[in-house]
Length: 160
Image (cartoon, rainbow, N blue to C red):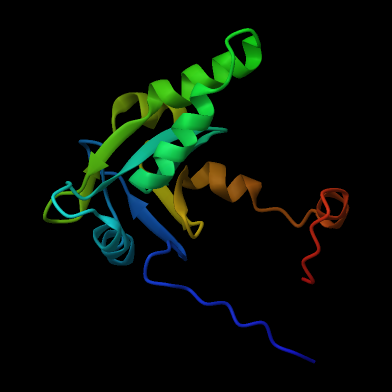
């Protein structure tokens, strides 16, 4: 039986971290996420990330990745109402955030509302981005449902 080695560079978000929002809507980023953002920051630019919300969670992107996503979103025609509304929501909620000396970011109220964040949060590393979930919402998606059919129908073969 062979082994698959997965290389995780220091420039990728990984792991799951549990955090609590403070009364001002600030969240402490895990040290490895801060290091990842610092590594990715261009010289002279402020170290930060783009945060937006959709599908009940927030997603944080490296600035260069957000640029690619926003270009694709801008290409969505206004003639398709559903896609136009999706574009408006994702781009309208997007905020560039930086962290303070203690590693905290202040999440704007519209994003807190979009993700239903009140206190307990889960940060999930997704390699080139990370997600921020309300803990109850995140826990509710963790099911024992068999995903084999959905994976197969999308031509995804992961031997789990």
